Length: 243
Image (cartoon, rainbow, N blue to C red; front, side, top):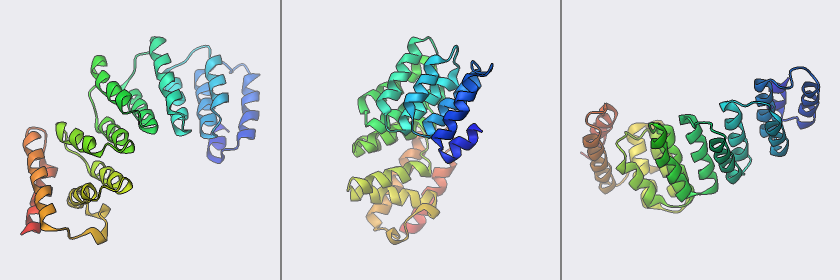
């Protein structure tokens, strides 16, 4: 029933289900309460979601995550960050997924400084950054219009950017009117995943091809011992284009 409420976003029906559960012997069940939090979040009523959360006799990691997700998806990233702080104060240790959600909340609020601090603090918990974390940092910088910093962030990290990274950077370049960045990202995206390239952007001027080749070659050197095959293949494609 709760799945139905989430799918149709029928808040009134969801409240009736909630009332039934509240009077049942299952009202203290963690997973049922988590489902209620998720339902109210999807229906856009975080006040009731918070009520459910506050009344829970016990919580698990999903409880915290659902609150962070709910606030973020309903445009209240700052509230999501407060929940994260509350979670740490309650003695719950953040996980890799937790930080991905927190970085998404920072991206929603364009909270660059706080987002970068959270990203760096992952090391304190022994959490290794994944592509999901990198992507969220790029979203933070991109939403805030700090496109040079987003490029520098990509170039400074020993990871092989996937096509989603360049697609995001291209889109941010378009949103913020940075045509040069849009074209550079488009060039790299076209090599890694031609299906995502914009038809009227191809072919691009030789100068931009050479820039893309240089960037890919540099990334190959950095990631030499980290399975750089995708970049080398893209590099060869670019060189064949440049003649």
